[in-house]
Amino acid sequence: MNTEKEVRVWDIFVRVFHWALVLGFTLAYITEDEWMTVHSYAGYTVLTLISLRLIWGFIGTRHARFGDFVKRPAEIKQYLKEVFLLRPKRYLGHNPAGGAMIVLMLIALFVTTLSGLATYAVEEGAGPLSGWIAKEAAGWKVAEEIHEVFANFTLFLVVIHVVGVLVESLLHRENLVRAMFNGRKRLHLGNSEEVS
Image (cartoon, rainbow, N blue to C red; front, side, top):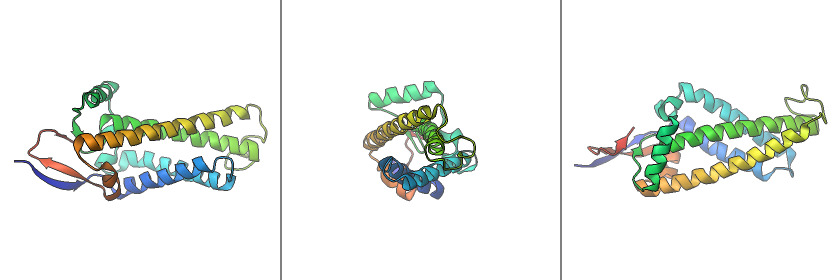
């Protein structure tokens, strides 16, 4: 017998964080050189969000904690192999590839925002690092290049993430976008495919 019910997987913090991060990164990316005030505030928002997410990764609910979804490279590789064979295990929380993507995105966003703060301090003499970094300091072009490279790398990760969500949704016949809005996922009772 295969009975289905939905259970809460993503808490309100994870869901608000996710969509606020989407908005913050998108706003920062599209306002790049045109509206520096909007760009910098969007960047501050992203940095605040990832800082809070790091804390929540240790003290949050079960599926929000890093211990629930950060896996060894061998597990990630095995999971990706199963995806390419169209037979991946279903996870109630993040699958190993999704967990790796979260870690990569957090790192990429942290480097992007930190290099953005350094660039803002040097170019505009503004922001929280302006007292530590002299305006027009030597090497400021390096910070600007790092900022641009990591912003574009983050966008690349976003595209891979969206493709992964769509593939996973199709393979498991489950709307993962909806789950990130309402926090609920299908739980199979009496079905051995479910991995929590």
